[in-house]
Image (cartoon, rainbow, N blue to C red; front, side):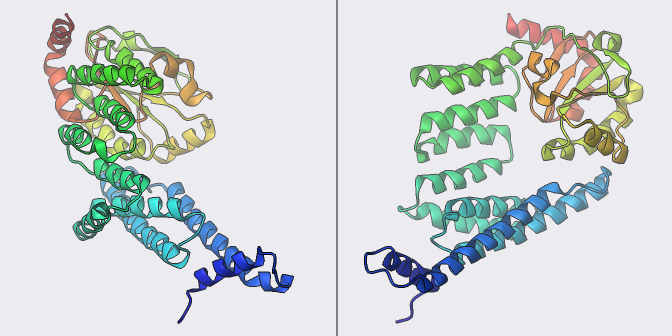
Length: 370
């Protein structure tokens, strides 16, 4: 009978650690196999890092779309490399991480390919039907499926449906409902947070209780005036009071945040289209590396002022506002009232609505709060 190389190596390792150990020369195959495994793993890590370091040639929609397509193809290739690693080194110390990365890459690659998505869904079903599938792997699959849902309503329903697939359903529920609340429309978002607080308090999950309270504090700002003053990256003085009469989008972002960068083309397009009608954007960057931010903005000029502080996401302004996002889009109406902290979804429609009747939006929010 033929013995697989990795199995043979493990058998040899067991023998060498027994009292009947042979000469040190017999250790070579095991050490060579382990060394080859580490080399293969390091190569995978470097490939993943190199993909993460890539950035689009420009923020023009056509260029950006081509970049995303290229990235998803590359992620599909990386998924195949992780799969090959798992087959070659089934008992590796990196097995669980490799398995998780494999599924994650497959899920991201499937975002632009219906064929890949169909294959992935079949694979996920096969795994989920296996009663011996470990809880951690089941969670990986469910989280990837959660990431692919089309609407925030579907997301909420999915969390409620699959929460018992997790080893700690209350923890999963709290974590994912906080995320769902962040992207839900007000006042439904507030109802979700109140539900999370009840579960977190009943199960004594202090970590998620604190997170929920922080989000509730942000939600409680809605319908109230927002004060903001700072010196922009270019040296200009920014005061939100000076923007009265305009609809303002606060874009909380960072160059190191892929979803933030991905959203810039749409924001820029909307700003160019509606600026003449009274729409402005203020960037709140969480970057701590000033030269890197300046280099990015030189390569991808945006046109609106940028807040910068070397403390990044721990800056005084970020902390005062509850460290929104990134990314996070906050909308301020013509009277200086915060009217939306989840403006990423339906941004164009929300801006159009505010430009037409921003004062009424704030009034309606205040009536809901009462």
